[in-house]
Image (cartoon, rainbow, N blue to C red; front, top):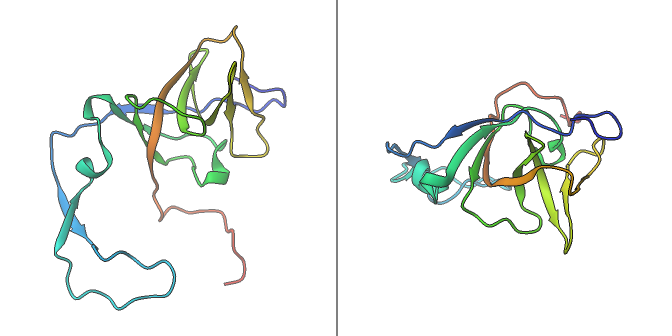
Length: 161
C-alpha cells in the first residue's frame, strides 16, 4: 500500500508458529561479552542457555516473522531479520509492533494517542501512517526480540578502517 510519497508502507512478513516442543542447551558466556575494552577470555564456559526458554514467554501466542522491506532500517531492522512476536502482550505506546492494516502486515512503532493511532517508521523516506476509521486495523502482536544474521553482506557504513 503506497503512502503519499509513493513508497510502500507495508512489509511482507512471513509468519511462522513457534515450536517449543524441543530443547537445545547451547554454551553460554555467563560473564558477558565485552563490547568495549576486551576482557580475558574464559578458559571454559560452564553455563548453557535454551533460546526457546529465554525468548518465548507465551508459547501458544508466540510467532516468528521474517522481515521484508526497509521501513525500520534506522533501528537496524533489515530484510531477512527474524522477529519474535508475542500476541498475548497488551501493546503500549512506543512498542515495536506487527500491525495489520487493510489486510496487509506492516512493522512499525506504534504511537497511541487518546483518540488515534499512528504507525511510525524508522526510515526518513517513509511517512508516518495515521490509522483512520475507514481502515481495517489491528495491532497483531508486539515484537519482543529481533534475530539478525550478522555475516550477510552489508552496505559499508564506516569507511575509516
